[in-house]
Image: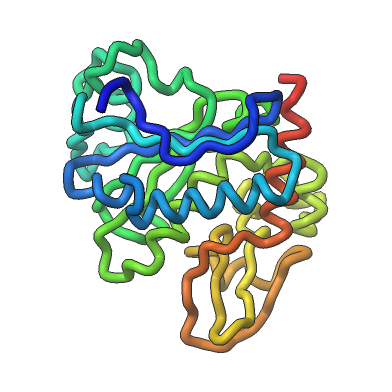
Length: 255
């Protein structure tokens, strides 16, 4: 193994609408999840395939940082977001050890996988307030957990946080898909309404609705108000999620 990253999945040809997802492990305990065949890597591959097959994306790629050849992040639970930021900006306390000055200069989402829990307090994405601030035009950070008691949410959560970075909540199509009233325009949390609870053999919570199934399940074009339990976590994206990503990509072509 050599270089900074290993490509796990790649489709299409580079164009003006490219989705790049870079995954990182906090320690060796998370490495298997982001390696080919691991639960996070497999989930992200599936999600990228769904978006690419939907149309409107020129190219997508999933890459794993080669911690085996460089450094792990080895973050502190109280400062892991700042530690990840420092790791990407090599030369600080948690330098990544590669020959690149700043990994975040690579356009796309930089997804940090940790073991600090699988809940809304430990899974999030960096806010992006303009159409040119998403992963289509800039490097954007996100983070999510593994090695949790509720292990079936790990794949769903990783997809949600990575794909938040490819959706601009200020896009008119996103407003329309989430039925956002003018009084709530600018509220990026409305992106969760792009998900739904799908009625199958049992109810499945799709990625964008994870952690927010009670707040946003009855909102938007892909809403579902079922009260059936128990819920299962799904890696299948809704039409609304794929359409929102497509619209964000189209708007970013002039960035």
